[in-house]
Length: 560
Image 1: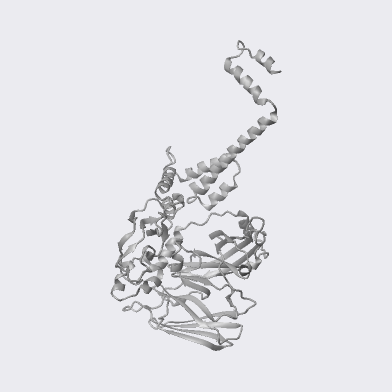
Image 2 (image 1 turned 60 degrees about the vertical axis):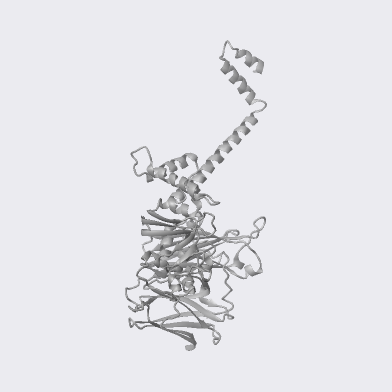
C-alpha cells in the first residue's frame, strides 16, 4: 500500500483526524528504510542505559559511600539488571528504617539532609561530602557541641596544650558524647591551614598554632616560665606537653587519639573480588616476589599491628603504550583468628609512576595499620602486578601476647631503616597513616638484613609496665645495649635512668637507639638489650639477631 492508497483508506470520514495524522506519521517514520528506525532506537536505548548507569554509580560511590557495608557493596556489584539494583536500593533503605510501619523512612530523610547540609556548608574546591568534616558529619551526625574559630586569630590554650596565648589557623573542635562502635567522649579537631575552608582532621593540637615555628611568638606558659623549651613542645608526642599532668584528659593522650582516629575509619569496601577468591581457594602463587613483616605495639587493651610489605622495583612491570611507564600493584589482605572468623580485611592499590635506574634499584614500601585484640591470628596476603598479571601470595601465623598487669614487657624490636619527626609529615596537611608511631615516622628494615656499608644499626621498641616514681612521675630504668659478634660484645652503650627515652607515659616507654657497626666484620650479629627497672625491681633481657649482607640487602626507598 502506497501513501495515496493509505490516505484514501484513512479518509476523514472513516477515521478521526488525529488517527489520520498518526497513520501518516507512522508511514513516514518507516521510510526510507527500517534500519534507520532501529538505529535511532538503539541510540535512545543506549542513552537510557548510560543514564541508569550514572545513577547507580552516583548512588554507590557518593550517596551511600560512608554507610554501605562491604558485604552489601559486594552484592550490589554482582547485580546485572536495573530491576535487581532498584530492588536492592529499596531494601537497603528499608533495612535502616527505624519505623518500617510508617510511610516515611526517617533514616533516609536524615541521611540526605546531612549530604545537603555538608555540600552547602563545607564546600572547598571539592564537594562538601568529600571533605573531612563532611565525612564525619554524614557518618555520625551533628556533634553534641562545637568549638569554632573560623577566622583564626588570638587563642588562649587550655592547660592540656601548655597554656599561654598564641595565634591560630581557623579550626573547629567537635565533641560527641557517644559514637556507636567507637566509644564515649569523642573529640575531633579540624584545622584549616590554608584558609580555603577545607578543614582537615588533626590529632596534633599544635597543627592550629600559626606561630609553632616562629621563635619568640606564641610561647606556652611553661616556656615563658623557663620550665620547658619550644623544642620540647615541637618534639613532644602529638603536641602534648605533659602526658602525666592530672589536668590532661585521657582522650588527649597521643596513643588514645591515634586509636580513636583508627576507629573512626571504616574498613575499605572490597573492590577486587578476584584476589579475594584466590585466597578463599587457598591457592599459592610465587610469580610475583615480595617481603613482609608483622609487628605489634600495645594500644590500651588492644594492639596496633603494623604490617609492612616491600617489593623490589626490578620485579615490577612498567607499562607502556599510553600508560606513561607506570607500574601498579594490587594488594589484598585478610586476618583470621583461631576460630576462623575474619577480624580484618583490607585492599589497596600501590602505584609506582616513574621508571629509571634509581627507581629500579630501589624498593616500594607499603604499610597497613591494624587494630587487634591479643591472641593468635593467621594472615593471608596476595599481591598482583597489575600490568603483568603475576601473583604472589603469603600465609603466616602471628601472636599478639596478652600483657600481664604489672609485668615488665617489651614489644618486638624493630630494625629501623629510616626515622623522621612526625611534624614534617603534618605540615603537608595530610594525616599520615603509614609508618607513623607516636611522634615519629618509623620505616622498618624488611628481612632484618643490612648492607655492609651501613655505619650503624638503628632500632625501635617499647617497654610496658615500668615502675613510676610517685614524686617525678617518671620511670627509673637502666638500659644496656650490646652488639654481639661471635659470642663477644663488639659494641656497648648504656643509658642510665632511661634519659634517652623518646616518649614516656604511665603505659609505655618508647625507645629509639643505635649501635655502631664499624667494629664488626661478621655477617651474623645479635642485638642484646638488658633492662633494669629500679622501681619495681624487675629485669628483662631482649635479644634480636640480624645479618649484614650486600647480596641479601638492597637500599630501601619508599616509593608510594
